[in-house]
Length: 155
Image (cartoon, rainbow, N blue to C red; front, side, top):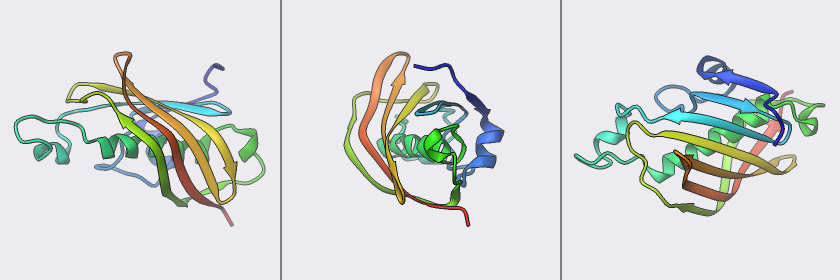
């Protein structure tokens, strides 16, 4: 794995992608030419934890997939990738298309830090495909063979 080329904090991430609080699940990120890694600390005050589940807060698997998708979006708009060098992706024109072979294998709870990674598998306008994984303290929490996004270029 190459050394990180671009590192972003929460403020830079929020400025780069269209997601925002309370639905932004990236605290920091490192972008490389073909991959990205990021972290999110489950604070415990997230609105959805009040009911998921009562007196037993568990970070939803769907939100784990969302977090990986946000990291993939960040890659598309900010990574120093040669495949994205000639044109800029419009952050307002990216949306989730599909996911393939998603598996969750660990409960994630308040206080856990999600260590996320996405690797570009293929990009061909208007679709980008990534492989994604989440670990917590070195233990696999979630995996997606495919996170597929649709996008368009800036005018």
